[in-house]
Image 1 (cartoon, rainbow, N blue to C red):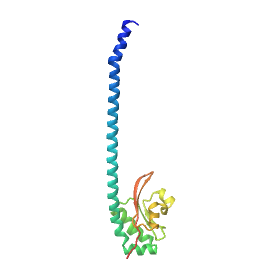
Image 2 (cartoon, rainbow, N blue to C red):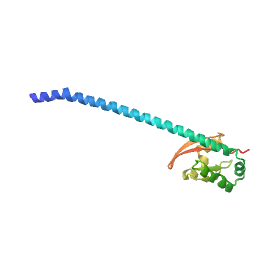
Image 3 (tube, rainbow, N blue to C red):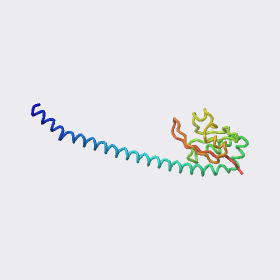
Image 4 (cartoon, rainbow, N blue to C red):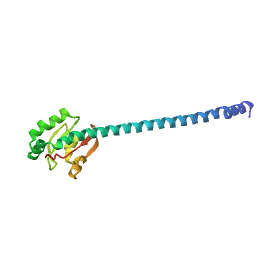
Amino acid sequence: MKLHVKQLLLILLVIIMPMIVTLGYTYTAIRGSIEKMELDKGEEALQSAQQYAVFLMEQQKDILHSWAYWDDLYDHVESGDVLWIKDNVLISAVDNTSAEITVVLDHDFKVLGAVNGLDEWSQNGYENLGVIQKLQQGEHFPVQIYTTDEGIYLVAGIQIVGR
């Protein structure tokens, strides 16, 4: 081999190879740190979302709990008075609460009225929602989060017991 080729190989081995190894190690270390930071941020965001969901559930629970013992609502649900439910419950729910969708069912879980209901849910029947099924099974205050084509919904239910 000529002297120039030997010198180039020596330069390659002594200078360039350690640089490549160092750059590779540095890239791997930085990438690992970035992935860990992203994972930590994701966990923080998830924890914040969970805390917010708990806050919303408690807020809905307070609202629904007061409605559960509303004698007039109980009487009008019993009699199937759809007009009264529309005027006094559905409109009030939209105007005075953070509820985006309100559905009132009778004691047989048939819809008496709904406002802003999702087509997806009304076509499949509200009674097929897990929250409604949990009410049918006797759970007092079921809450579930649903992901739909239109967004994420926190759905809560309570049985109107009146007196």
